[in-house]
Image (cartoon, rainbow, N blue to C red):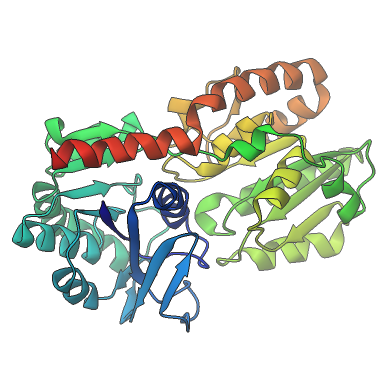
Length: 382
């Protein structure tokens, strides 16, 4: 089967949908499928020089990105020409509302090739400029309904999306829910003490982890406020931030200069090192304003970490309070602080949640998710 994935950003850009494509794509490539990724040549900050590459069996085509509108919408119209010239059995676009979603659906329609679309839960306008909100408003009333109409199958990553998809023109009989997943290496014990040792953190101290894009939408500033209050009262924990800078790193760096128990690291890509990071931590915090169904949620669960998170979008469908962790409202710094402190203090609760999370995560192995996605393709080609 010859498969074309279309998305805004792909490796080395740090991007959730791009990572989903990589996880599924490499598994399909190992089965002998011809897997292609068409994406912009932007890593969100700079232009990626290597335009054509083959990585993990996936053929990558990075196309000239004209601009990024309102800090979120890529525009690389040459994808139209590339999809038109080459024949594929399936065209699968990711993230609703972007121009390439429309272009992919249009080409699929014209060439009579099945089009699959994964939404990735992009249904909020918070933290966007007035101009960006206007673009979203126009897009969701014009381009998005047509793109959904031309899609043969729409994959939602969480049940929360179902009403939103139908609101903007998606038909119920086209929708299937397939969640994101996580890698099985996270179930295996690696070197859990290595992460603390490398950072100079004593074994008897607890680590509270943030792993994600350092972006305002991720709630970094609220987490820093909560952490600084906690560190005024206790010295038995460290707070570690891991991920690429998308506007908030200066806040973390500033806090780290005044307290050596706040540690700021760049992104980590290697799966073994990611496993070491999770297994060397004690609590995972996800204080976001919005989320689709974050990969890190399942990764933290598979690693046995109790979680403190906000009940936004797809999160509460997979994380139950108190079975999998503690939920706090976005922006409530006191509640965020209290939840972290509760997990730091209650060893029994942490252990109970840890066991629950390991069991819950088993059904989200990427091997299972890839097979479900392949099943969608095969159903359309019958």
